[in-house]
Image 1: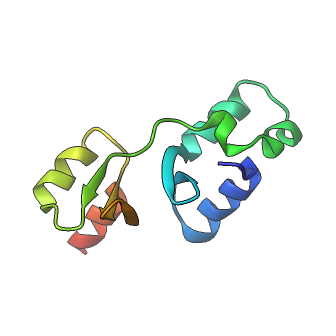
Image 2: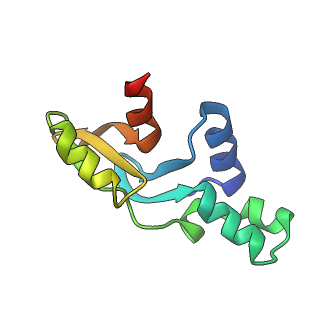
Length: 107
């Protein structure tokens, strides 16, 4: 949550994700996406100012979480509403599933 938006953007680019969960330690506290960052750009703010904002200053609500044994039907229905779902075990986040991951299953 304390990292700069520029770091989040770099992570998204490096790992080919369009959204990321935001953590405070091991606790998920929000989410950030390309859309979130682009809305800052489109609002007319200067790139130099946007890149130094903390993720916490622009983050959105956290993605929903499911247990590691959640059925694909549940995950699919959640992805109809949200861009991503976090997978957790005993409160610890293990990974993220996005709509793009569902498409990969078809190929």
